[in-house]
Image (cartoon, rainbow, N blue to C red; front, top):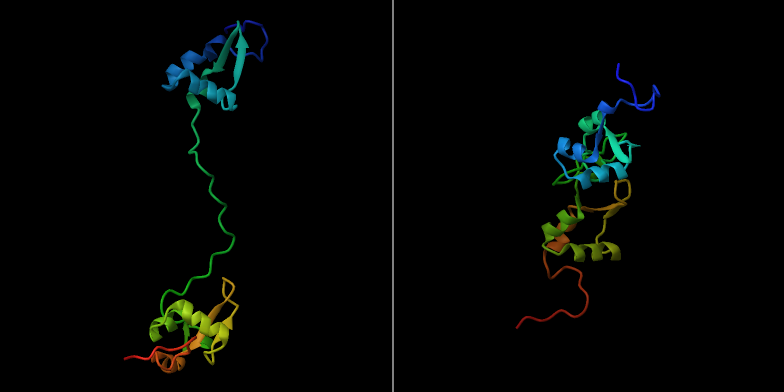
Length: 163
């Protein structure tokens, strides 16, 4: 059995220790890369004979982390499925349209329809706060007939007369 230089049984054998230069050759990286690992505490060192020595086994077994931001922990409960396109299939909302669907049906901009809803100009419209994002307006299909024709729509200001 090889003796340690200090005779202490806890001390590693000299064959188990390597210099920073040898570690950089083993890993195929620069000496400054090895020093960065030492500074960040990824590799342990021992100072002997006015040298900084590293554990050969640690240098060979070191695996860098993937890097980047760590992933979030998975959610404890799954998200509710979103209704994509069309109206909701919930029985309470049959015969009702979402605001965007109503705007497309009457050919008006979404912002205009939202203004009508805030002013209370669309009768039968319901604001539902049970959704995941604060709330959603539901407009009855029967309101399409009233707002389809641009002449019968609510308006602000003076209408221009066509010549």
